Image (tube, rainbow, N blue to C red; front, side, top):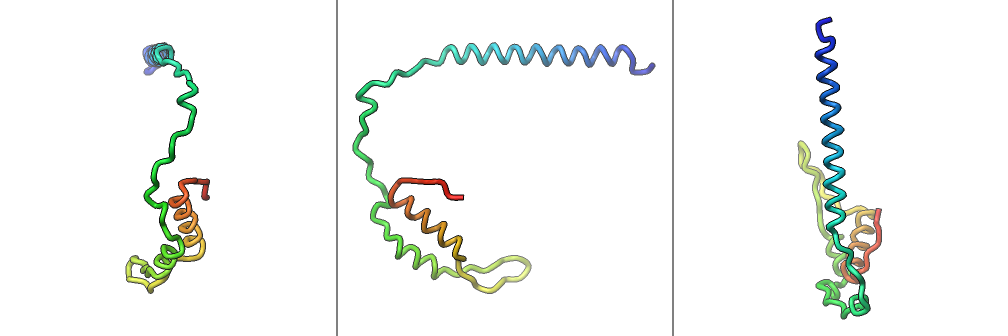
Length: 110
């Protein structure tokens, strides 16, 4: 047997080193978790503060959507394609995004 016992010993040694590495990693993670301090919540930290001024609070969504509808796009593959505007689903997502910017309240958009 050409690869016989010597090769099997190398495989077993590699597996033993991997097990030892995993154990050291687990111990290091446990030690790191023990160092993390728990932050207690105090009453003064739970009181909401005055909301910050939002940059887009005065955004006019209708004007922004009208401007987006006027934009012309061209496909740039091998040849330059015809001009086209944003399709309805993209305009809908843009409207939702602008509403999120204005209100500051986000929700999931898929």
